[in-house]
Image (cartoon, rainbow, N blue to C red; front, side, top):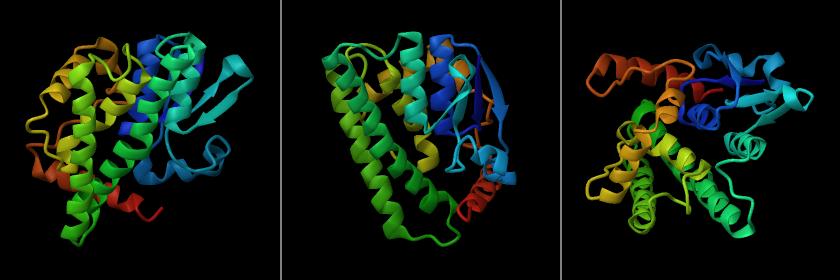
Amino acid sequence: MIDLYTAPTPNGWKASVTLEELELPYEVKPLNLSENEQKAEWYLKINPNGRIPAIVDHDHDALRIFESGAIMIHCAEKAGRLLPVDVKGRAEVVSWLMFQMGGIGPMMGQANVFFRYFPEKLQSAIDRYQHEGRRLFEVLDRRLAESEWLAHDFSIADIANWCWTRTYKWSGIPVDGLEHLARWNDAMYKRPACSRGIAVPFKVKSTSNDPEAAKKFAENARKQLQT
């Protein structure tokens, strides 16, 4: 059994979607980020960085693992799926996984901060991160023009990138003209395990057509910038 400490964010979904796809048994341990539960002393013993997600794998002497990419690799290796064992295949999947961790995630995260959360609108910063987010989306689109999935087969690389790119509206990043990205996005949504995973620890109501809900969400997220 795996204990999953998480919250409804793209990084949290990376872990829960992976667990759902691999059909590994796990128990959800939700953390209330607005109450700073991720900074509690007991949780810092699991993740010293005070962020989500983290897991404790009781099949390996209560092994703690933090950082979403590390969790995904561990779970894929545990199940023997979604991460090839041959050198070439593994390198391809890990490359696209790191593409998300080093590019898509940080750039979209900063777009969220400046576009949604900062009380002051710094247009140059908004433009910087939205434009870079769009450029990275175009990299994905070019790859998906030549391949059904980011690597040779469906893998943790697809899960990692999708859990972030699917939130493009919140980041204010346009996706017009990216037909291959759209095809892949639809294919991901059609996977039952993906749909289950993004409803963990609970399903988040879309704020696209609800300005008040979007405002409240942004206010709660703004508090996290100081922690």
